[in-house]
Image 1: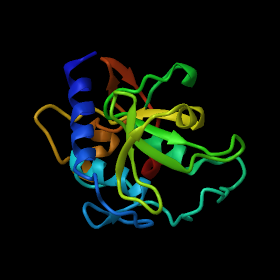
Image 2 (image 1 turned 30 degrees about the horizontal axis):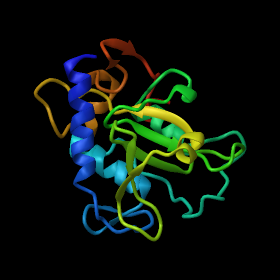
Image 3 (image 1 turned 180 degrees about the vertical axis):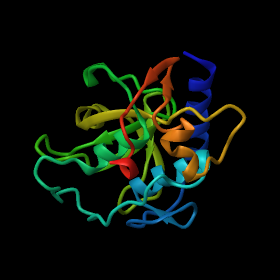
Amino acid sequence: MSAMRRDIGVAALGETRLWLGTPYRHQASLRGVGCDCLGLLRGVWRGLYGDEPEGPPPYSGTWAESAAPGTDPLTEAAARHLVPVPGPLADLAPRAGDVLLFAFRRHLPARHCAIATGDGAMIHAHDGAVVAEVALTGWWRRHVTGVFRFPDVPSGRRGVAESDLRPGRGAHRDRRVDGEQVDLGAPPWRR
């Protein structure tokens, strides 16, 4: 594992821990004030890179919400901005700072996300509670649909502006996971 990969995972977990105790608020993303699971992920992104690469669309607070047939908006957004972790989910051993996506029924798209602590636990926000660290139990593991990592931060940089994530600057398309080049294709503003 490269030092950069280890550092971004540790940095992501550090940013996530700052949100512990934040009350649940649907579609919010303000540390200490309120957030939902996506708001937590968005806040950690801002803490690591600065501006968010895109704003979230309106979304329902219920897990039973269904997306348009054949779509999975949360997974699709994660694939645009995060680095997918390859391998079978049955062998799930998330590292500190990994982003976990969950679906609560096999036929439904992902509707929940959390950030792994790397030691058999995760930090997440859910209705009726505060952002908390909980065990990544068998029930949660059975519902994981995807694992992603935050992209590397360019050397010596923190708080990357949105314009720095455009392909011409190399931060969006040219991502590395453990020293291996990963190309996720054109970002949404180029499609």
